[in-house]
Image (cartoon, rainbow, N blue to C red; front, side):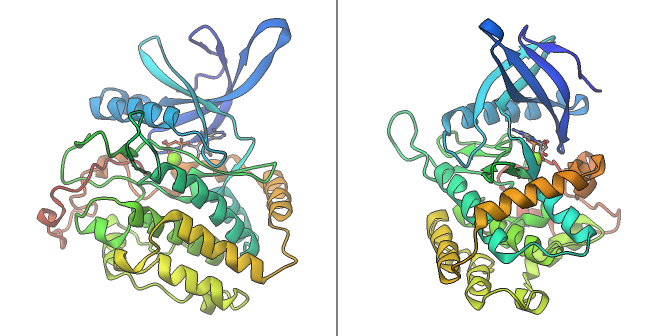
Length: 356
Ligand SMILES: Nc1ncnc2c1ncn2[C@@H]1O[C@H](COP(=O)(O)OP(=O)(O)O)[C@@H](O)[C@H]1O
Ligand SMILES: [Mg+2]
C-alpha cells in the first residue's frame, strides 16, 4: 500500500516512499507552517500485515516513546506521533542521504571496498549515538539505559552532510519498562547481527549492541555479512560458533590497530568486549589519530553523494537483504527440518519479533 499523496493528521503530506524496513514503510513528507514555512520530515507507518498484531503496535508506540526522549546529534530525532484513519504514524527528522546498507551494496556491486578510514568514522558516529541511548537518564533522574537491539547497516543513516545517525529504535526497550512485548521463543532483530549470547537466550545488553556494531563494521570492510547462511538456523549456528575470519585476510590495507579493535568488539564472551560504546568509540578514534591525513567527514560526504548517483530503487529496499520473513518470527524451523537448536535454551529471551 503506497500512501504517497495522502496528508496525515491534517499536516504531514507524504511525498514519496523513502525506504522500507521489515515492518514499516518510511515516507519522505513535508509539513507546512505559516508564511510559506515548510520542513521535510520522515513519516514511518507500520505495514498493513502487522497492523492487526497488537504487539507490533505496542512496539511502535514504544519506539515513539523511547525516541522522543533521546536527543543526540547521532540519533534520528523523533518529532511527533499521530494517528490518522485508525493507524499510527511516527514523524521523525528527515535525513537526506542513504543508509549504510546501500553504501555497502553499491560499493561491493562495483567491486570496490569501503575505505577503512570511512568505516572507522561511521563507527565513531554510530557509537556516539548508541552511547547516548545506553546512557539515557529517565525523567526521574535515574539511569535507564536503552538497548537498541537491532544495530544493522540499514539502521545507520548517512547524511549528505557527512553526519551519521542511528535510527530505528523499534526494538529498543528502556530498562525502566520491564517486561516483554512479544512471546518467548522468538528472536527479534536482524538475525545476522545478533550477539552469540543472545542466540543462547541471554538478554540483550550494552555488550550485545556493541557486538552488532562490530559485525556491521566487519561487513562494511569486507563487503560481506560476517554471519550469513541460507536459513535462519544456519545463521544461528554460525553466530553461536562465533568464528570471526581475521579482517586483515580480506583487507590487508586495514591497520593492525583497527583489526584489534574489531577482535575486541566481536569477542564471543561479552565480558571480553568493550565496557561501553564510549570506550569502543575512543578506540576507533585512536585508530584515526594514528593515521593523519584521513579526512573522514569529507570522505563520507563524497561517498554519500556518489552512492546516491548509482542508487537504484532496489538498493534502498531493506527487504532485499532481510533474513527472515514475518512468518519465521517464531524461530522454529525455517527449513521445516528437525530443529537442531533446542528452543528451550531460548526461553526468556528478550522480545523478538521479527523484522527482517
Ligand atoms: N529519518 C529518515 N530519513 C530518511 N530515510 C529514512 C529515515 N528513517 C528511515 N529511513 C529509510 O527507511 C528504511 C526503513 O526505516 P526503519 O525505521 O529502519 O524501518 P523498519 O523498522 O521497518 O526497519 C531505512 O533503512 C532507511 O533507508
Ligand atoms: Mg530498520
